[in-house]
Length: 273
Length: 321
Image 1: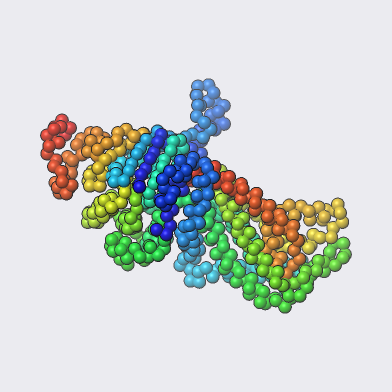
Image 2: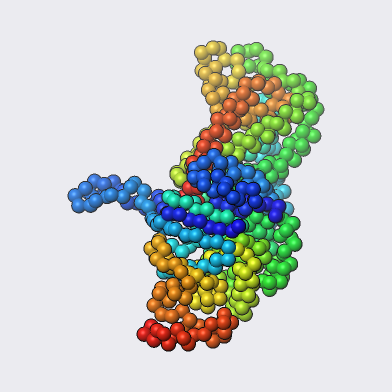
């Protein structure tokens, strides 16, 4: 059973190189300052997060830059263990974060595929079996033999998505970077991601793209200054976050595809436009 | 799934038995259970670090024509140059001194690389640690495995040197003829089947490389002054460890004399004992069991400290990198 259970979890980063305690400050600062801070300043990236996700949940993560979206994703991926509180993650996690990181620019795309797969818990044999499929999906062809540093951002996204979507993870964690691919591939990736989400357990997806959110998610979490500000149905939460109806800006094709109409809501809330 | 382990241990364990009501999930980040789960999962993912270790070597020599063969060549050049030079400086027969220097360098390279690159192990893998959930020990294994592969390239040089000087090594020999007090130097028995003792010695040295990498890696990730400090100390230890000189030179001082004191001080250097357990059998020298005893104690104490560090700070490393 795939599930994520987070109770009262906080993530505090100690910042060791911030010089808040120079000799000058500690001598002169006595007059006016209150240096309540510990020796090492701490950034509270997440505060008191309570979250319960289960099989079939498809969660969109919205919020301003620095609101804690990526940190939350890493907490859910098991990369950070909470400084306070608890986080239980059950299921095979496959995260896709910043696409430049975690890939070696000097080695070829094929080798990067293999290493990614091994990191995600596959064996070498299993990856070798999937390589053709990934190559086909990414449409990179002979380029896969080139070192990764010759790739454009979009090509890297293709590679990363190709790997995670081929290994059937139970919990898929996506950070916003995936918007960098071209429209045609986006279409393809979207289908594949939807497919994957239907099959696999859970998706948590941080994105600023309305289209992506609507296509892939059904609930949403609004992060603000390290806390969950609102959690609930996608349309509601994102509309509150954006201050306008989520469906308003979507193309008719998208709406049609997800089987929703824009009209009724716009009529309900004319003031929001 | 051949390898069920995916995320950091405890945070994720999809293998059925552990899944429901496992203590692991409830266990605090600082628990022995999670520390050992980390090691277990990293061992299970040996394909990963095995591949990464190879990758590191290929990486270093990418676009060079003879590639990793450079490792062997540079080792051969060092052994020939220093062996030749110092055998003349110390007036020692080259036939026994050259193999001595070669083996000393081989194992010193391994040990010092484990210490130096060990301190950098988590810092160098920052990108992976912050973006992919994986047991911490993966990076420790990767670093040490890379050194083992380097070492394997250097073994070739030993084989060549041995082939050249086998005649002088397989019979009893002296490194120096007269000691300080005028008596004859230590008579070494020459090569025999005891050479096989080098195999367990290397295994023990690798085990030490692992705890050093783990412990120093964690400390250095938190305190970034450690790597430069360690690297300057390693320079010092290189000169203080009998690699290009032989401890036979120190023997035979009168009790209380400066020479005798230096001889005792040299034994305080832990690297001396590590070098000796590996080198003595391979060049057919007399070996005192005290070296093994010292190494044994260091191995146990070191692993104990490293495990405590793993238990207490495993989950912090991702925050510190």
